[in-house]
Every structure is written in structure tokens, then in C-alpha cells.
Length: 357
Image (cartoon, rainbow, N blue to C red; front, side, top):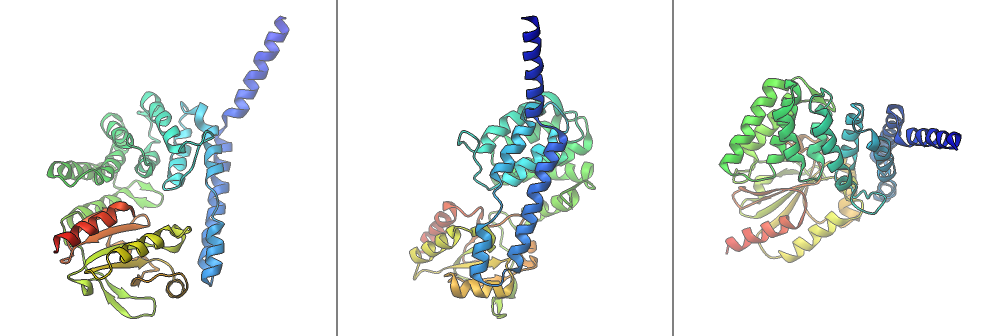
């Protein structure tokens, strides 16, 4: 009897250890997916026709299985410091993706509360939180901001405080443009530059990210006059954003691989149909190669004017960090909305057009 109990206990311990995951296992999951994703990006870049790109785009590596594997590897180890980078990777690669957990619920809604509890209980003193702070910005979770504010306030490491301050300032951008919020953002950005300017996250320094946020506050916030853009279209013809003066404009930063299901194209088609005959236009800033953009416009129903921006020079002027992104501007180029491509884009445009009556 005693032998049976000991054997069962030993077997359970071995099983738990195998299931719990290790740093090596987590690294393997991450490396395998990142390798497949980079190969997919390369194939997409070299695809020559719209049909080839559609075929490649449809074969985008599914982040769901590796994300769930990563969660299984780190879930019971969240007290361990090594899981922080893996948790950051998990949040980053699933951002904007509709990844479900084993029960069919959004994976982020499952993992973020547990990660948050582990950080608050075990890791506030860790110097390994910087990558997680930036990944939390990408996580679509309402508790990301209070967690970053807690890290910024309670971490004993000044550099970690600075990165958390940057993340909190970035999330506050989505809260409101009220003066009190703006002052808080500026305070946090100042702290991030003082404490953590040299820290790099995914190859970009905190100083550069903070400077971009300051530029957004000064020039690209709601109520500001949007900077003019000057470039060329898909056939090389010169284009300027100011050419659309007097019209309500949806300025849409996009690229083909972000619209594999045609949802963006359909949304734009419906908007142009609804506002036909009114002083309204959609103006795209497209990151595909110029020849690819021309092919898209001739074969896939892209019936709106587009700047060709394969090197992201125009996107950089607007500090675009993720695609697609929409600005809605009025006839004098004053910004009324900036954010994701959602129903708010059409609602804002409708309100501006109503005001012009």
C-alpha cells in the first residue's frame, strides 16, 4: 500500500513536470513560429500577382496552436522569472488576432488576468519586465493600463519604471484628449526618457518611441490639423493630401496582408456607397510594392486613391506603428478621429458630413 502511494506520487510529479514546460520548450515554440512567420512574409513580398498574394496570404501561419502551446508551457510556472519574456511574446503575437483558448474563449482574456496576478505577487521587483510592459500595450485588455501604472509606481528598478511609464502613456492615448490626461501623458513620457531612454524593445529604443508619442501629442491628436502628405500613386502620378481640401477624408494606412478576408475593402466600399455624392473621400496610404498596389487596384476592386508607400516614409510621418490605422479629418484637415478601422470611422465621417450641411 505504501509503495503504491509513493509510486503514484512520483508518477504525478513526473507528469506535472513534463506538462508544466521549461525555458527550452518555450524557446522552441517561439523560434518555430517566428521562423514560419518570417518565411511567410518573404513569400508575400516576392509574390508577383494578386492571385499569388491571395494564395500566400491565405496560408498565413496560424498563431493559435503555438500560442496555446506557449500558455500550456508557462501557465503553471508563472512564479518563475523566465516566463516573463514568454508571456510578452504570447501577448505580442496574438495582438489583433482572434485566438481562442481550449474552451473557445478569447485567449488573452484567459491569460492576462493570471499573468497580471503573478506579476503583482511575484515579479514587481524583476528587472525582466521591460519587454512585457510593451507587449501589454498591444494586449486588448482593460487591466493593462492599471498594471502598467502599478509597475511604474512600485517597481524598485528605475529603468523598468521608465518603460512602464512609456506603456502607460501610450495606452492613455486611447482614453481621451482631456487636458488632465494630456498632462499625465507628458509626465509619463518625460519619466520614460529620463529613466530608460537607451532601453531597446524589439530593436526600437524607448527614446525613439517616447519622441514619437510626443510628436503625436503635438501634431496628430484630435483637434490638431493633420500634416499634409506628398507622394505618388500606384502609377507614379503625384499626389497630395491637401488636394482633398473641403472634403471629409478617411485617411487609411493599410497593406494587403492585413486584409486577407477582404473586410477592409468591403468596409470602404460600403462607406463610399453611403456617402456617394457628398464631399467625402477615402485616401489610402498603402505599404505594398507600387506594382502590387497597381495590380490590387485593377483586379480587386480598390476604387479609392492611394499613396504608394512601400518604404513607409509617409507612414513614418504619421508615426504609424500598426496597420490598418484610420484618421478621419474634416475639410480643413482637422483630426476628428484616429484609431482602428471600426464602425467609429464611419460614424465620425457621418457626423462631420452632417455638420457641413
